[in-house]
Image 1: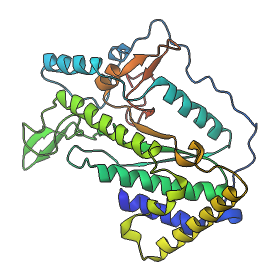
Image 2 (image 1 turned 90 degrees about the horizontal axis):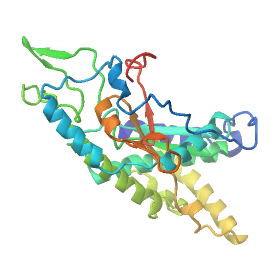
Image 3 (image 1 turned 90 degrees about the vertical axis):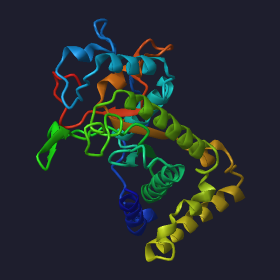
Image 4 (image 1 turned 180 degrees about the horizontal axis):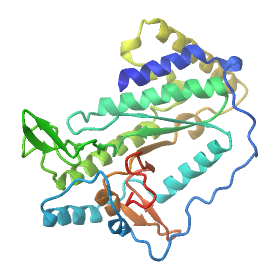
Length: 315
């Protein structure tokens, strides 16, 4: 993931430059108002999905073990809050009116073994680098979304995997079972959902620290580059773009604009993952104390994949 996303950032750096960059058509309206949460039917509840067919779901042999894991998740704090979700909805509404872009990046699937602060930091700064290039080239805001802090589950083409005549359940992601091809590792373990929650909480803590603790300061944009592209032609092009931004910042300071304000030193950074493992999503769906409406507080944005998007299905 790191090399592919970074390469995309460098391609953007080489292809976008101020006035010659692509600019979308004029927005249809100067402001956007969006009803960010529809009315919830009185018949609906977070467990309503159990009344429909749920595809791509693991089969848990021990229902008591599953109930114990769900009980733990019912009691944990939400990973995100309804106000943050509404903020993202408003930004996406403006994007839909041609008033910005959406940039999403991250891993195909997160894992417990690869969790590392440096990995989270590198993903964050690559997205920041790409967003800077896009904003500079288009003169438009960019909504930054990380495919992380919950992107564990994987849809599978077949429920079982066969190697040398041995059939075991398919590996469905670290929040369901383990990748090693053994009967114990491939057992669908509901307590892995609890482990995934705790890793997601750590990831979100790191992201919030980076987005508000100074790392996202626009004056530090030179520090967002990655070590493996140093001394390359692509890195040189990025540094030239960064120098133009630095020049603009110096001009703003010269005319009295305070570049130490939060608008220059912090960013809104959102998370997203595929809504696949429904017991986990049910446990983290909470009623907003302000609006009385339900939000899935496992992430700022969730999507339903091609294999589970049946209108009459559980997802």
